Image 1 (tube, one colour):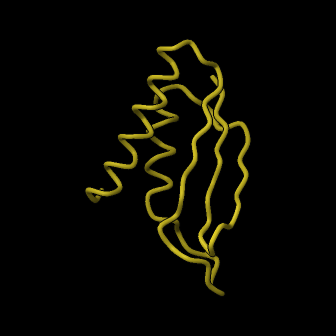
Image 2 (cartoon, helix red, strand yellow; image 1 turned 120 degrees about the vertical axis):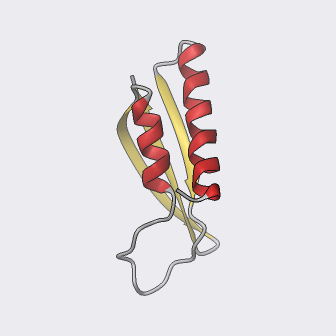
Image 3 (cartoon, rainbow, N blue to C red; image 1 turned 30 degrees about the vertical axis):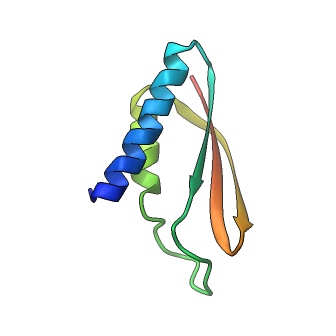
Length: 82
């Protein structure tokens, strides 16, 4: 994994771990893509899989997700439950 992907995944995992330590059963993660929307919408979003894998490795399961486009950039809101 690249340094940026590692950093993003480590930060999300740290937040997910803190939510566990604080006794939360729901964890909401916001992920912003570092790319703009184009006509070709079938490509991998850099770093998203790595972040999601680290959060799920802590015992969180993806429950719901929603995506918005702001300033031509996609943002994901991922709702995890334990």
